[in-house]
Amino acid sequence: MMLVTLLLLSAAPECPPVGPTSPGISQLGWLGGAWSGDDRGTLNEEVWLAPAGGLMLGMHRDTAGGKATGFEFLRIEQDGDGPVYRAMPEGRPATDFRRMAQGPGCIVFENPEHAFPRRILYWRDGQTLHARIEGTRQGKPASREWAWHPSS
Image 1 (cartoon, rainbow, N blue to C red):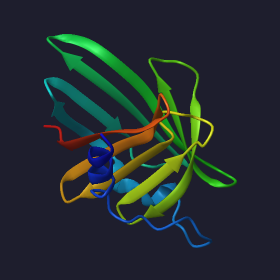
Image 2: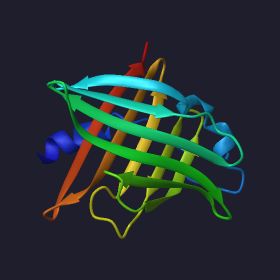
Image 3: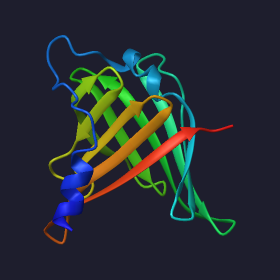
Image 4: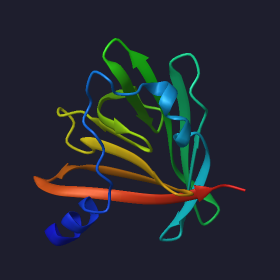
């Protein structure tokens, strides 16, 4: 399990830590659009509106066997300290993750108070959008990763 986690961690590109010249939400246009992929028989779909007014809105849906198996409302908002990722799985109240790193085609959010996920990563590799969540489950490192392509 640890080896699998280390291999997954090595797949993400190096994303520069946040600094005074870090870009904001307006530089996240690469995340916008409709994305989908197959995750072991489950169709994952994620849609992000383009950045506008310091806000990006997103949604995620999983379906398998013709039935919805999960959904999540998402938003990335600009506040005084930079972009904040707000996840609302299954419509629950938002959990905030602060931006820790950002560069061209990558962004990393983190909430050290949240066990899983603790980190949320997005990055583009050509026409593929990758997402990964990392943290701990039952005291052990855990992660999950997706690769999506533009939906038709």
